[in-house]
Image 1 (tube, helix red, strand yellow):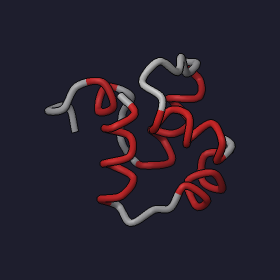
Image 2 (cartoon, rainbow, N blue to C red; image 1 turned 180 degrees about the vertical axis):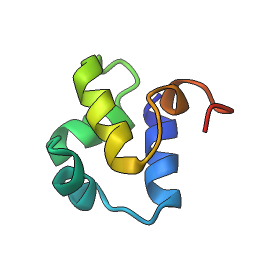
Image 3 (tube, rainbow, N blue to C red; image 1 turned 120 degrees about the vertical axis):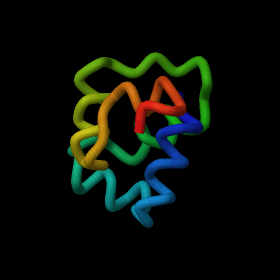
Length: 66
C-alpha cells in the first residue's frame, strides 16, 4: 500500500510536504505509510490522502484501481 501511495504521489509531482498541506496528514505519517509496510494507517487518514491526490483509497490497495 505504501509503495502505491508513494508511486501515485511522485507521478503527480507532489512532495510529502505538499501532500501534508493538501491532506492535513503529517509528513511523518505519510513517510511512515510509504516506508513501513507494517504501519497500520487509519481509514480516515487514507481517505484524506486519496482526496488530496485526486484518487481513491482503492488505488493504494490495488494496482489497477487508478
